[in-house]
Structure formats: C-alpha cells, structure tokens
Image (tube, rainbow over all chains, first blue to last red; front, side):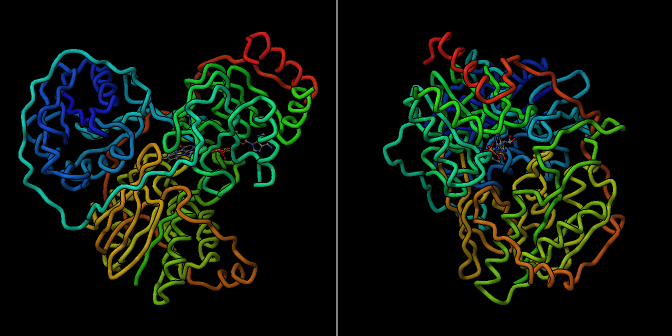
Length: 303
Length: 255
Ligand SMILES: Cc1cc2nc3c(=O)[nH]c(=O)nc-3n(C[C@H](O)[C@H](O)[C@H](O)COP(=O)(O)OP(=O)(O)OC[C@H]3O[C@@H](n4cnc5c(N)ncnc54)[C@H](O)[C@@H]3O)c2cc1C
C-alpha cells in the first residue's frame, strides 16, 4: 500500500501535523511519499521522497493550484490514499482532490481498524466505522489523533508550478488583535461556555475566576455572541493553553475546544449533561446546573 | 441575483444518542431537530444580501424525510423566498458524494450566482458537501467563511484559519461559500414572518430525480466509544459537591 501525504508549510516551518500523517502511514504499514508547497530547500525528518512545489511561485494558498499540483504527483506515484490533516487547509482541499481523482473521502479519522477508519459522530458522543467504496481514497486525520513520528531525512524533488487560477484571489491576512490578555501565561483559567445561557450570566463565572485568581476564558459561541472578546477564546481558532487548573463551565467539549485545553494539568468540568464529551478529558466532572453550582462554589472558596 | 442555500436538519447535540437498530446511524426517534447551526448562518447571510441588493431570489433546499420541511419553513420565515424539499427517507445513509450529487443535479440548470452551505453538519461533520458541489458545477468555492461582502460582481470574504488568523479572499461569481460559526448574528423569525412563510412556495421532489451515483464511502457501523478516561464524577446537592471539589483541589495542592 502506498500513501501520498500532503504536508503543510506554515509560518516558515513544516507544520508538526505532517508528522502525524507520517505516523498514520506507519500505523497502516504503508509506504509513503509526501508533497508540500514550500521553499525548495525544506528538510522534512521523514524517510521517503518529498515533492516540493516552490511556494515563491505558487504564492499563498489557492485550492485549485494545490489540487492540480497534488493530482500531478498522484499521477506519477499512483498512491492508494492521499492523506491530509483535517485542518482549514485539509478540509478545504480534500473534497476538491477527491472529486477530480474520482475517489471517496473520509474526514477526520481518529483511529484505524482492520476493516476501515473510525471517525467521530455527533460531537464525539458516537463514532462511525467507514470504508472507501473506491479502490483509492482521500483521507483527513483529526489533529492530535496520531502521535507524531519524526525520523530520517527525505529526498526532495522539485515540481513545476505550471497551474494558475483566476477565480480566487488572496488579498491578505488578518490577525486577531490582542488587548493585553495572555491566556497562555495564566496558571488557572476558568472558562464560560454556551451553557451560561446569556450574557448577564458571564458574571457568575467571572466571580469564580476572581476568587481563584484565574483568567477568564471562553468557548467559541460565547465569543461569537459577543459576550466575551475573541482574545479569551480557547481552542483551535483561539488560544492553546495548558494551565495548572482549567475549569470549564457549560462547555460540551467539542474537539476544537479540547484541542486548545486538553493538555491542562488538571481539568474540572461543570456540566448538566453527563454524556458531554468534555467528560473524556475531565479529572473531575461535576454534574450540575452551573447557574446553581458555581455561585455556591464561589461563596465557599471566598470564605 | 439567484441564490441557493442548502440546509440540513440535525438533532440537538445535547441529546442522548443511541445507535439505530440497523447499526449504521443514531436512533432518530425521540430527538428534537433543528437547522444545523452552520446552515443558519448561511440562511442569515443570504437574507442580508437580499436586504442589501433587493433583487435577489433565495431558494432553500433540504434533503431528508418529511420532517425537514420544518427546517425549510424556518428558513422561509427568516426571509428566504422559496423552498425545495428533496424527499429521501434514507438521506442519512447517503455519503457526502451522493448528497453533493443530488444538490448539484438540482442546481445545474438554475444558474445560481451564489450557493451558501454550512461548513459542516453538526452530526457528521465531514465538511465535504459544499466544496464537492462547487467542483461538480465548476463553480469557485471558499470554505469556512467568517465575513462576507458583495461588491461589483465579486464577493470579498474572510476564510478562517487556525489560531485567530483569517485569509482575505476575493472570488468571482458563481461561487459556493461554506459558512462558519459566528459569520453573523442570526435573527429570530417574527410571528408575521412565520405566518407568511406558510404561504411561500415549497416544492417537493423525489430524490430519485437527482441521484444517479453510487456511494464512494460505506458505513460499516456506528458505535458508542469507550470512555477514555475515568475522572471523578461528582453528583448531588451543590453544597456537598462543592465541598468535595474543594477538598480534591486542596489535596492535589492546586489551590
Ligand atoms: C473549524 C472550527 C473551529 C472551531 N474553533 C473553536 C475554538 O477555537 N474554540 C471553541 O470553543 N470552539 C470552536 N469551534 C466550535 C466547536 O465545534 C463547538 O461548537 C463549541 O466549542 C461549542 O461551545 P460550547 O461547548 O460552549 O457550546 P455547546 O456545545 O452548545 O455546549 C454547551 C454545554 O453546556 C451545557 N449546559 C447548558 N446549560 C447548562 C447549565 N445551566 N449548567 C451546566 N451546563 C449547562 C450543555 O450540556 C452543553 O454540554 C470550532 C468549530 C469549527 C468547525
């Protein structure tokens, strides 16, 4: 079996997620080649062939350009699977490759089974076991699901960038402004989720943060609703934190939130749904209505 | 301008899920359904565009059993003009390639300028359908948008990347846009608009009219995952469990 691993080159580096793809290939016992749009002098720690399309020529990400470059490599190498991370890059690109390659796609794989691939289902409350119905397939892997494997040195071959796209034009990046809050330095973080119900209730969580000397964090819906500023958002599209203590109040534990806090030293979750996926990472899971429980806890801690 | 919005009806993710008797999906009885959160943003964005430009017709499409008409009606109450229900009691067993094929076959001769979809569904989360529809129809496509503006026959959008970074992209029409959480603030339907929605056109089609392909991915089974980590679970009176929690934190020297 042969895999074509599509790595990401980000902020001047080979993104570590590439080594998760390498680990996945190892787990399948498959031969692997890789592809990057990157500077042509990159040196991935990977034993195999790496095709590089010069990022100077390909410029910022354009899906059709990347798709066609990958298909060119696929034609040469004839892999069974093309594998990407389930990232903003991977989920954007994978379906486009799959369609043109006439293959099925399986998204966000968390595990491998003899018969197929395991993916999350219903906010990870269930799983599904899927199998491609086509000989070949495009696969995306959940970030963090496979422990990175870094080893060896690659032989790099440059490929021409001879494709272009007029349909989309990249015009620049925008970065969230930080207003002095640095969650990554906090020893204790108390986060509010959608379970707080309304803006006025943020105060309840804020008071708990105060008695614990903690920074206030948030899940995404709380930020999207404008209850707290974006600089307080924890998760893949916010901050990645690992405090001594993380208290999640009314947060279900979607993978994108977990990715930002699961390395915390000690995790307390307060949630009225006993099956909420946050229970998977919680050291202490308090089954309670936070509106009732948090004020009691705050009161006890302050006396 | 001609706009299509694709919506999926999904259960509330706070529900208790069990595996269905055929072993391939979740048991669909006893669940409360709603519009997929990502798709609500799609509907809202289309309605805002109509409010801004005036001359916009918004069609809302949903594939599924009869109950998905509720989702279409809600989108109509939010401001969409007409509905297309593609009836399929087995929609949950179709793979994303088949779902995208159904949408593309419905859309292909209708000259949509913009197709809005959610970036993924809350239950499956495969994040494939929007981009596949674009490929099938030869349309441009930007996924995961958190900002949208239409100007001079083009759309200017922001595509969300990781860690608080966004890429600004200009796309030519026709274009498929997949909507991310927080794209806008979704309005509540008013009672007069709910009443009006009942009189708006809602056509029903049979899925066989649009589906002409086999799945490219097969579901072998759905199952309940093993609990990974056995943390301490505290249940009971708030007063007692607060004491227990404080003791644990003190014992571990965390506070
Ligand atoms: C590409 C992408 C990137 C994303 N990035 C992020 C990110 O960076 N950060 C992030 O957080 N999310 C992110 N998300 C969103 C993520 O998928 C979830 O939608 C989000 O994390 C849910 O937030 P939540 O847990 O607060 O809300 P919900 O999932 O709605 O959960 C609310 C929880 O509160 C509980 N609850 C309700 N009422 C009470 C009460 N009174 N007392 C106690 N418990 C109660 C419920 O049981 C439920 O478990 C991203 C999604 C995508 C697709």
